[in-house]
Image 1: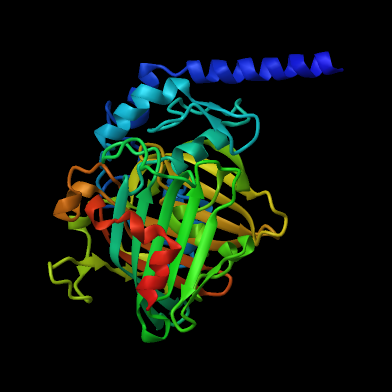
Image 2: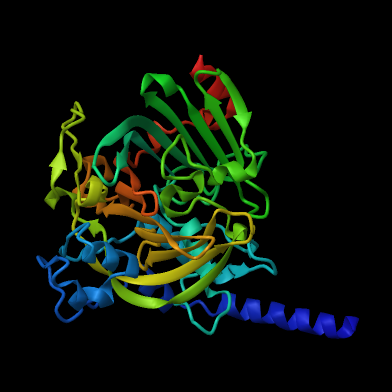
Length: 436
């Protein structure tokens, strides 16, 4: 029996090793430049087209079922935009070239071997590979989302009644992101030292407005070891104390919004928290666009003249942006924890950037629950400091609870500038000092 087990284990390890060594230069070229021979095209889908409830059936092949329903119900109309090439940062591409051939999956979901930086698995996924979804999830987790460090400052959330469009509450945040490890562009490389907790990434946010929640702060530490649970702390301004959040609280409504902490950026959790399934590749319309060609608003009166995305549709819950044709990986994630409030998520993962501009959420009974859109602006069309960064800029979001008819919208001022991010911000001690 032991001999058979060892034989099977050896065969599995050899299979994993073969998978790692199968990476070619062509794989890496194709993963970062999927449109080098032209953008995807679909007959009858052209820039400038407006998709309405009267003609949506002819566009059904490039939309997910949830979006088709929204349009048929008259909730929103979508305008097709010009295609864009979101070429990622060269440092990230170079790191992939240097290291991808050494990367393999471990025995358990959440284990990865040989990874240093860049895209972990640049090979095209296969439906015959039972762990293809997991590999795509790692590519998202280790994507160049916000680079090595960035800020969203400020970041406005509005809580809206979807039936009336009334704004019930507006909150002003500052978000900060820092990669402690797997860095590709800004010294120190590839890891900040000392790093005694062996962190991969940290997120810190604070609330500026309104007054009743001013100085509320959130801190998230994600370990390089995905099997180790995140450490998450919350500082409540009115209590003036820090408390550690229990694991289940990251799936609660965050500050009364339609978003949970686990929803941040499309998915903000561990790989090992989910069962990942690759469902196929298709061409779809995603909210990825030239921000200079969108309707913008100066309602928040930024001193540098920066303007924000507008909203339209049912309850003013949909980012008012154009959608472009993109090649997309369809990935399903199902929580491992049977008590998780989500039944499954369907992620429409952009093939070039591995961002999650569109996610559909089902509840534990399998019913359509939340419609999640994150508008992605091309960095060269955004703030001058973002030009040339190779970061697909999160520009706006709409999270709709279609069962409760309520939504939360978010307007970003994303700044890819590591100088705005200090290591000291990502500590419990800083939370206490900031809150005084």
